[in-house]
Image: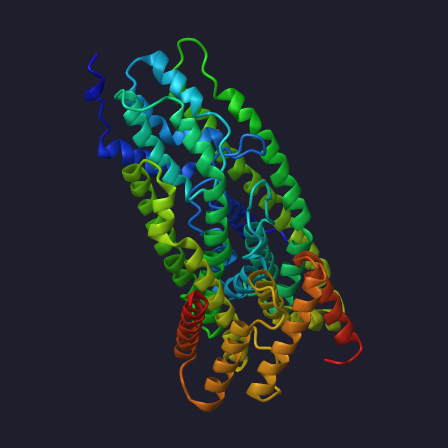
Length: 261
Length: 259
């Protein structure tokens, strides 16, 4: 089977363009969080005709990376590149429909790429200091226009960074998929299992970052309320989530009142 | 020239607010948001200083080092716009503006990081993931609505408040109680993530842990694995290492015939 037919090449180009725009939202423009995996994954999945794969990848990567925060000079892992590349590799590698093992393979592959994306991001942000020098207006120049031009050049730089990364990562991932399909069935089973365990790792990361306790009381209370309701009452899962949110809200309010006394 | 006639229009303030969304377009390690701040405040300076040399020197002043949480930068931008107006009208000291910026950027940075990145984002994310796990395909939209309802609302609110109060950060804290909201959001996030595990039997089939166990056993198994992973993470595991390690464990489980 030919890996890079015309349709795949156009798809990669479209992903790189959309991924480049999504990448701007991470730091450079807006920060409306359309770059978060839970949005970027399904969007790319929808573009390629398999929204479900994007939803699954988006959900697990969202939990895993949501608390990797851009504090001070720390530049977190690029979860947008991770979600977009993993979805594209899984869907395109599966000929338009991602199987669970391919989803696992895509996620694993893009996880291995995280240090590369962080290094590229770091280099770009170092080079951006040159823009400050370019913002200085010469005699007779409009200082405001010169500054705006230099500042907005940063948008093109950030866009190109993501665009080029996708043009490298997605084809490389598809080559890797073409090798992966020849691996023994057990390797495929293992990566399908890997996908099912990822939400648990995501949940552990959230608990680790939000609480100082291993057995956090809100976490356990949420678990018990949801498990008992699921077991005892035939309620729609969305209603159970709503009840858990309300229980968490009321318990926190109660705790705050007690602490203020 | 009659200094007291200097005014800024609502449209100028709107331009500053819109430009605040591009505050970090040229973010760099050493200058951080300095160019972005000057870019955002520029429409006000152009309005207030018709003298080109004065305009240029004010713009240069705003290219000094600046870094804070990007959303709460709107408060400092609003306050700076007001103080530039006061200065241009002869009612404020030139030194007040850099002093205000340097006094506010660190505390607002810490406050904004802990509220927006550390509390609001995980809350919106875990609720959306919980909804998505039940099979709802509109969860990404829910995430965007939950997050941006607060984000854009607060961003606009603190910008207006910064302008009206001329940078009264104490009043800002009293008005928005970010710390209390952060505490609440974190607790609810933890409850929701616990609840998501408790509903493991209702997860979408692509992510359901196993179909051969009864619902509660399934959920309890998920809880135990999660707690083990929390302990491992506390010992210093990074997400990348843990994901690679988890893939290794899965391979071992399958090859040894455990699963």
